[in-house]
Length: 255
Ligand code: MG
Image 1: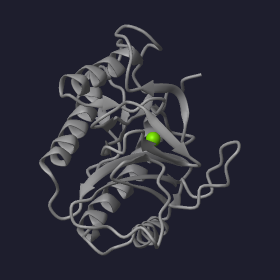
Image 2: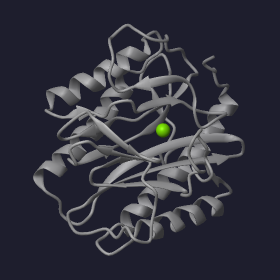
Image 3: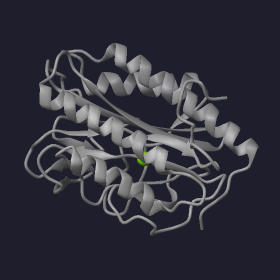
C-alpha cells in the first residue's frame, strides 16, 4: 500500500531531510585527498546524533547479509551504491565518491545522496556527475500527481541514454516516510504511463544510479560495482508529490 502523508507528517519529514542536507554540505567541505571513508562516516554519525536523529542505515538488515555497519554508504569510483565505509579506503585526487545517507528523526525518515569530486577529476567523471544530477531533477520534474511511476522512470532512462550513459540494473528508488523503504519501488528505467498512479501526499525517494560504460552490476555482499569497472554516480532526494512541481524534502530550506 502506498501511504499518503498528512501535513504534520510532511513537516517531520522536512525536519529530517534538513539535517541530511546540512550534513551533505558539511561533508563536501571535508572531502579531499587523504581522508578515509571511515572518517566521513564517523562525522556523519555524530552529526545525526547531535541533531537528535538516528542514522537509518546503521544496522539495517536484509536477508543473507550481516547488518549494514555504516551510518553512510560511501561508494568510490566504480562503486555504485551501498559501499561500506572503511579506514582502508583513503580518497585520492581524481576520485569520485557517492555518499548516501538516511536518517530517522522523531519517527520519520529521509534519504538522500550526492556524488562528490575529490580534487579535480577527469572530464568524463565531471560529465557523469552532471548527467546524474540532472537525471535526478528530470525525474523529480516528472513526478506529479496524476502521472505514474513509469513516467519518472522513463524520463530518467531517456535522458541518461541520450547522454551516452547507462542506468545501473536492479537498483531503484522507493517510497519513504514512516519507514526507510516503503511502496512503491521507483525504478530508473521503465515505460511511460505504467506503474502506480502518483497522488498528492505521496512521498518517494528518487535516486538515479548512472554508469559510464555498462548497465550491468556486480554484487559483493552489500556493495554494488559496475561490471566493467567504469565510474558510477548517484544522486537522490526524498520528495513530496503535489499537483504541480514536487517539493524536495531533503533540502536545507525544509521546515
Ligand atoms: Mg534510497
